[in-house]
Image 1 (spheres, rainbow, N blue to C red):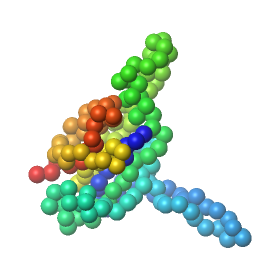
Image 2: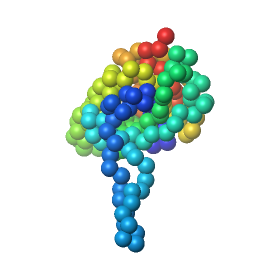
Image 3: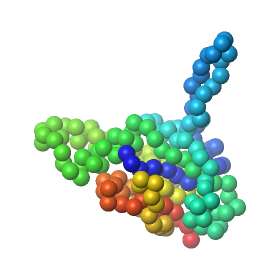
Amino acid sequence: MNALLGIILRKADRERLLVPQPRETRTWGGEIFEVGNVEYQYSGLPGITFGLSPLTEFVSSLMPETWISEEMEFARLSGDDLDEYDQYQWRIRFRMGDPDIFQFENELAERNALAFEAGFDHLIGKLSLCAIFLSINDELGDVIKIDHAGIVPLLRGSMRWLANTDGFVAVIGAD
């Protein structure tokens, strides 16, 4: 996937909702140490990991002024479920493959896609302040304001037509 999907959220919300996962350990010379960055998971999205990054000045400048005093973070989504969701949206767009096989595979993929959307929507509903970030090939399109009900249709349409979107930052529920 040539896209970066993430959530801009308050640090307090991340600490409340996302669970840090154990880091990989290595042993060199009898010494055991952890490697890699801490990744997080949300119980409603078991096939997704969240990697944290500080919010850049550029992205911070796109957020509502009322968020300036908040300690915000960027949580990048990755994992098998996101890859499957992307592939499902692509296959739906092009209706690829043998019709009988497509029907069977599509039913399973559709259940997985709906589970991903439900988990994503549930997480967004629990965040006090958030924005969805979708960057395509390191490009970022419009900054839009949207209500919570519009997130899943926006995500579904953008992922299905990924090659035709410029990406976005969708600020949820901001005045």
